[in-house]
Amino acid sequence: MVMTLMERVGVMEGKMEELHQDVKLNMETMKSEIRGQITTLLEKFNWMADKWEEQERGRKGKELEEVKPSEVPQSSEKSPVSHEGEGGGSSEKGGRPDYRTRRLEMPVFDGSDPDAWIFRAERYFSVNQMAEDERMEATAVCFEGEALAWFHWKKNAGSSQTGMD
Image (cartoon, rainbow, N blue to C red; front, side, top):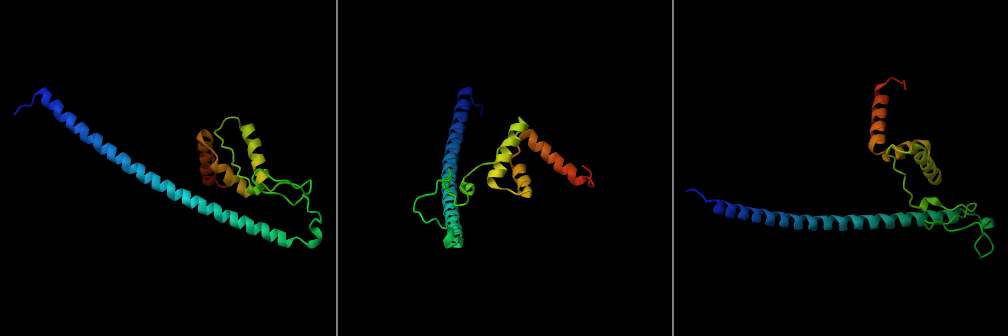
């Protein structure tokens, strides 16, 4: 039996409609799964934030317990050098805000304008009081594009050499 062109078009339209319905069903399933995953991630994030805040309160409480009574200001007014940081942390140590509670991000480096990136990275290290070994790990995470390729190459080349740089 030979099908006419119109019959073949009709069959193709039917198959296309089936595919369309399958895609639509799959999209709805994926949307539902993604919503569930996002909800789970938000719950975990909120739990982590609560735990972090509890630890910060505990740390702040221990710092206050360690302060000798003679070091506690007698006035109920705030000291002019003690002020709130943007992240909500205040300082009782020489007037400098407690930046550990601030959420700063390491600047991303894609290979362009290295001087500006180095300046921002050094400020980031200073604010976060990072040790030298921590700096290299933080830096490696923030490379992108050509900078990441160079770093990866340099690291692999360095591990294959026998102490020569």
